Amino acid sequence: MIILITGASHTGKTLLAQKLLEKYKYPYCSMDHVKMGLIRAGLVDADPCDPDEVVTAAVWPVIREMIKTAVENAQNLIVEGCYVPADWKREFAPEYLENIRLICLVMTGDYIRTHFEDILRNASVIEKRITDGDFDLPMALKDNERYFSLFKENADRLLVIQNDYETDVNRFLNQFERERIKMLFVCYPRCTTCQRAQKWLDSHGVAYEFRNIKEANPTEAELREWHARSGLPLKRFFNTSGLQYKALNLKDRLPSMSEDAQLELLASDGMLVKRPILISDKFVLVGFKEEEYKECCGIEEA
Image (cartoon, rainbow, N blue to C red):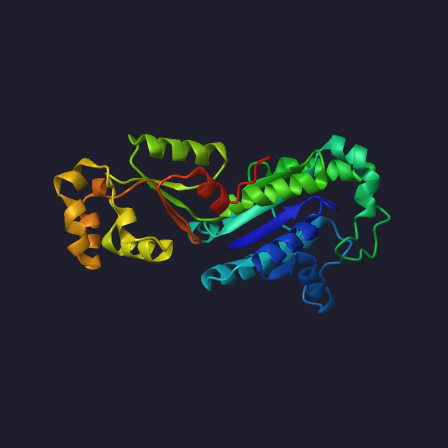
């Protein structure tokens, strides 16, 4: 995954990049470092004090191709800086875009007016700013308003700081984690347990791909992988209360069946498979227990 962070000046882009680096261990690239490297090497006709539009024209093509290379190599990368054009998506084919998440940071006018001294005081919390004297309240208000206008439709996530900075950022990070985990929710829509599980996922903002088990039964290969990753006995994958389970007298037959035969049987009919099944790259949950869902999905409730 490529996490692309942009936003207005002094909104904490570098701090967010640092938090994501520590959380996911992804490599981190600063657009400012790329900018200064290009300028100091004499490779672009630009000056550090040029307007953002001028610097973007020089820096963004390099950043864009770095991102494409990382996607092609199946590498993770965090890229942070203000030099992202508003129409950035048009420069990437769909196969690239599905691997990129753009986060735009902005602060509300009320937050800036109330906390402007704090914003200035924390300007160098991650990096030492060499020049900051021309940054004032009117500039901060204008810059944040501009980024909100430019990226409200073009960012995957708009991180709006409006109450308490740490609270807003941490809430965002928790939500981002839930969305980052690729989950598959396999269920039977008429099953009341599946309905309760889906309602829980939706009410807690957990992103998932929906799959009707009756229309798209798990394959033998999928079941074999899920079983291995779940750490559960294979019998737990059988819908022991279902009509098919009883009609086939599986209570008596299963103990003498090989694992391969059981998996083949499960793959033959979705109504034999216990549901719901929630699958991510970190866990496989069979059935619905709220505490399990809460723990595995990273939900913290008061």
